[in-house]
Image: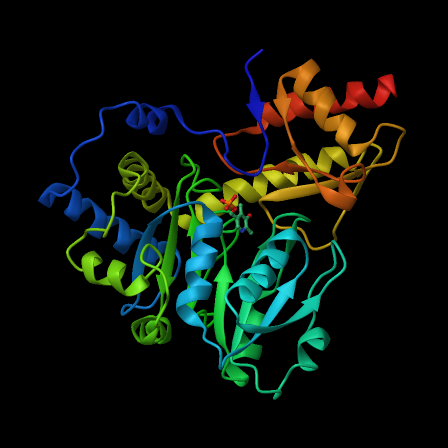
Length: 358
Ligand SMILES: *Cc1c(COP(=O)(O)O)cnc(C)c1O
C-alpha cells in the first residue's frame, strides 16, 4: 500500500505541486521571476493578515534559520525579551537569545499546558521590550491564544515576534489584528511545499528595527533582503523551485479562500479526534491546534512502538516525540495533501495495533 505521511512536516504534497518541482530550474535574475516574487510577497501578506506597509523576506533555510534571522535583526543587548517556552520550539528561542547575547527570561510551561493571562500578568510593567512565541508549540500540539498575547504586548509596548510556522493555513493567523510585529513562516508545514524556505513578514516596527540593526552576519542581514526585495529579488540564490511551487499553491489557496482551507484542516482533525476518542488513547493537551493531535497511548504499547509499528507494518508515518516524551506521546498531523480516507486507514492500523497488544 502507498506510503502515508502524517508527520508534521515535511508533509504529503499534491501531485500538481510535485510536478512543478520536477521541472528544470529556470535562471532567476529575470523580470519574470521578479514578477512572480512580487506576487508571492503580496499573496503572503494577504493570507497572513499583514498591514499594507509590511514587507516579506524570502530566506533560503529551514524554519529555524527564519527564527534565528528574526532574533538577530530584531533585538540587541539593551532589549529584555520574554520567551514563551512550552516545549522544544520555545526552547529553541531561548537558545537563540543565549547564543546572540540577548537578555531573556522564560515563562516555562509544563508540556501540554496552556498559556494564561495570569502567566503573563506577572511580567506586566516589568520593562520587557520584546516577546518570542511559537503560536503553536508543535512539539506538544498546544495552540496559544494569540488575541490575549497580542493584547498583553500592546499594553506593555512589547515588540512581538511570532513563529506561526505550523499554524499558517491550519489555524487563523491575523498579523495586524493581533498586533504581531514580525511573523515567521516556513514552506514545509501546512503550506505543503518542500522544505528549504522560510518567510519573515515584517510590520512597520520590525522594518525600523531591521533597518537600525547592526547584525553581525552577511547571510542573515534583513536589510539586504529588503533592498533587493524591492525589485523582486534576493541577495543570494534562493530555492527557486520551491518559490515557483509556492506561487502556484498561494494562488490556489486564495482561490479556495483561506477560511475554507483552514476549515478543511479543522474538519480532518475533528474527524480523527472523534474516532480516536473511542480508543484507548488520551489527548495530551486540552488546547489543541487544528494542525496536530498529540496522543498518549493507554495500553501496553509505548508511543514510540506505535511509531515503529505504523512505519514498518503499515507503511504509515506519524510523528514520534523526543526526549522525556519519547515513550509517552506521539503526534498525528492534519496538514498537507491528506483526506478522510487516509485517516480511515490510519485509524484502522491503530485499532489493529491496540488489539494485538505488545
Ligand atoms: C517545524 C517548526 C519549525 C521549523 O523547524 P525546522 O526544522 O528548522 O524547519 C519552527 N517552529 C515551529 C513551531 C515548527 O513547528
